[in-house]
Image (tube, rainbow, N blue to C red; front, side):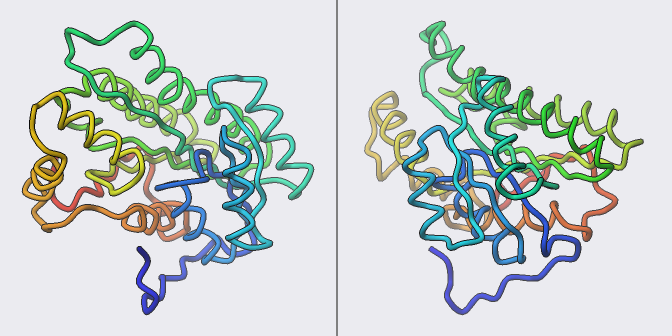
Length: 266
């Protein structure tokens, strides 16, 4: 939960610009949308669940616009991003945040589970990044921030397929950043740790069942692995995304920034 006494830093180069945030209706994406609005931006909040996106946008205020998008579908991304251009006059920032997970022992992962994770987590990054980057090159400005994971740095037991998809996100981010650097387009990623979201709640139940322990024990294990001694919040991630989006990070590209509370420092 946000601290009502906390005043976010105001970063240069964001006020008056427009951001697309995919997977923006809940969790980390919703926190990112809120953080960017606090920077004086317009936010186009995209989600596969249009009703959830509309409800979130209504709660966030008139500077937030909701649209439906399935990041697995090129035509859906093209149509959704084109709608943002029509409604808001363009965009200069993409936060490619939409992601999913399932949990299973590696030897039991099904083709369907593998494909589901890869279709959303890396095909979705590829499509949204490519379509936005083409626009950014045309307009000679733009920034991309992708949501990866701690599991993109360290293979996570029971999440081998998810880890593989998130490792791919980092590889894509690094390569795209190097290709677009000459155009002045920056591409970075954030790597959150154990973030308290609806996705984590599902994962806790799955992990508890697979390990034969209680959900409370799983959560305590997450906290025990975190040197800062608590679960991460979506706002912990969102504040770093706002920084990476801004001119304060003007000489950063191709990075996978750990936001893990010290779980991983490599």
